[in-house]
Amino acid sequence: MDLQQLKYVVEVASASSFTRAAERCFVTQSALSHQIAALERELGQRLFVRSSRSVRTTEAGEAFLVHAKMAVIAADDAREAAAATAGRVVGTLRLGMIPTATAVSVPRVISRFRDAHPAARVELSVGNSDTLADAVRRGDLDVALLGLRDEVVPRGVAAREIGRERLVVAVPPMHRLARRARVRLSALVDEVFADFPTGTSGRAQGDAAFAASGIARDVAFEADSSELLLGLVSEGLAVAMLAPGVIAAASTGVVAVDVADGPVRVQYVAWHDRAARSVATAFVRVLESVIDVEKDEKGPEESSGPASSEL
Image 1 (cartoon, rainbow, N blue to C red):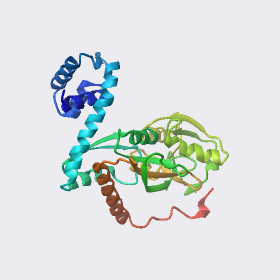
Image 2: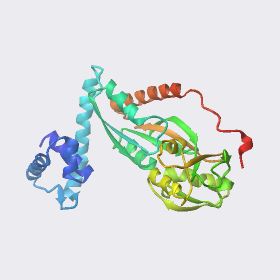
Image 3: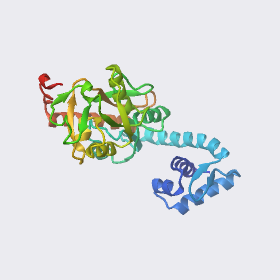
Image 4: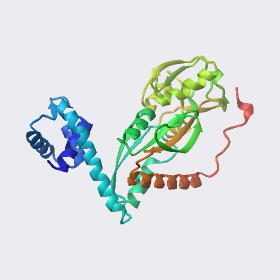
């Protein structure tokens, strides 16, 4: 049994696929399969049940996986600690982000991070804020970019606010509100909404704002994708409340209207509160420097319109 075999087991369990695990490990599928088969013979136990459609761990595999993960993490930590004595950052940064992150250009941050630390690698995944925060707490992710409503702060992780913005309502160009500079939530009472799924942080922002105002709303369409939400809006099927930057970056022809009493979304960068890896702390430092540069490039924020334009 060797460390590389343990890494293969961890990757196959994570990906539920020998093919994807081989891609992640930069080896051929046959080589990875051969190593895991050799490990299973040594143990005298099957670790995975393979079928034409899926791969899942056996009971023995689940028990083995717990210790395999710890061994792989310990080996990575040892390598990073040795490199740190020479001032180098090495290892793989596991980064998670919400799909509507707008506080900073994530590709730019990753590029700057790789420029500063060429021996480090970045693995990027996308999810909702609750799932990402849980992954950071478990140690499955090193850093996550989250978006939460104003009254909620990340729990069980170290976090820093990196941006906040009031959501706007996206409407079709010919909508009755399309020419308004600003509206109130009460102006949306009769609208059909497209929003993120119930129970997600993205959905909670709008739900909480309407509940606090005592206004019921009709959410007829639910989707994980902001592109799909905006597509529904552009076809005149619904309106949607999203971050201004999300709408500005979209290719769909919709109009963004300010909502004076709309919900505020706060974006955070989060990392493990007790055992942050060196790649995580290095990435956070780079992210903060990019945010400072982007703020300077944008200059002072402009007013969103006079109060007299509210309805």
